[in-house]
Length: 604
Image (cartoon, rainbow, N blue to C red; front, side, top):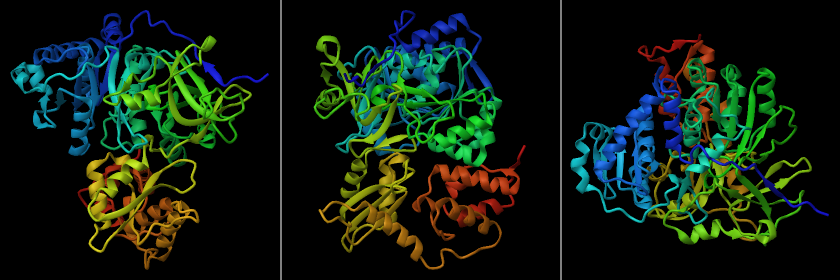
């Protein structure tokens, strides 16, 4: 008798509220003076947050914004942004949060595809894609109402239980608008395994367009806790220390960043009570090292695509995992089924596609009924063959004898790059659309590695085709950072296997040959430049010249964080990550560090 691979989490009732703003308002009545948002050492209380949101919500009503409409928010990280998002929810509207650093083409695409009627920003701005940009100051002083006629007509109403819109890549190369429900967030906030409560003080560091942002903001706030907004422009190990000094006890990190912290600066985790990992494959070795260093530290491995809101499954690590960290069991009001190619449940011990059910499922892909029906089918998986709506993740998993799910890879080409889901096909499509480019392929780096740290793109072009730097600039102008290949190389022809498929191993070998064959790139240098080059070469595992853009050689923001920490440690000072992100080449980094006007703070 075989046991089916079906796991169901406990059901929640949500009797005390089924919307985010209702629960935040309830805490404002119970704990009006408790800190809700902490920013640059100052607290905004629950009463203060709700009061600000009420003023903005009233102004949105005067502007003509009502229930079941989409409002874009493109504001700087700060209490005003959180109040604006809460105001949108109080209006029973739906928000889509847009990073201020996104290129204009991407912003316009978001506005068009979501049907947003207005974009809220730090200050008034130009109309984009027919959508006016209204400043938060205009809302607060009442002048925004005069711009009511600028708003486009309301489109089709979105469901009333919708909370926000996230974007994610799709197998067609076109990003999809994921409409997330309130209950998706609330069932995570109430999951006992994770342990949110009034004691929770959580660092908010994730990009606003990612569901990790909602995780870090709303889960503490609907639980009576505090969200602490990251102050620095670029996240580094010192941000963890600063956050803990401000009372933070809970952090959400990608495994890549967690691993780098453990390797380079494990003491930065001192004072953290709970480290929640997600977005990539977790490392058992790094978890064990952290838990040995800090015996009271709780480490959870959370799994889940955006379409299932944050984390449909989770696992509490004990530090004794040998090779692999399970993704665990379903959280509350969530079910997981492992299916074969015929969408039948596989027995325990056999791998199958992970299908998720429950109140956390996205309501739809906005504007794409066909794709919604394909990825969110109703299958006869319930008792007596009753229909169950599921999301087909495309991920493979297996349930072991211990009842825990373990991840077994993807059915398609989608990748997680620094915690962001990226479809290489989307980037390849954009490359091939550039004038002069023939063919293009995007591959993950390092080749065959357990996690994806970066992307490399290879393209063919005629004699007048674009140079590598031009291609990089075009892609960077269109996509968020995680989508932009760190290495872009023009090749005479794309290598193929004996059966005509792209040879990914041969492409990776091209990079190795290029690194090994460059003349003079292993030359030694003295002074600060020599120190910078030494660390860069060690981290990238390849020769680099002083004028090379390290981010075109495979470096990522994690490498920049590691450089700031290692070189700062050599000098006995704290170095901002921005020096390395903005410098880009070892020569410019060294020049900035040697500038007499540069005065870093001493460590400690």
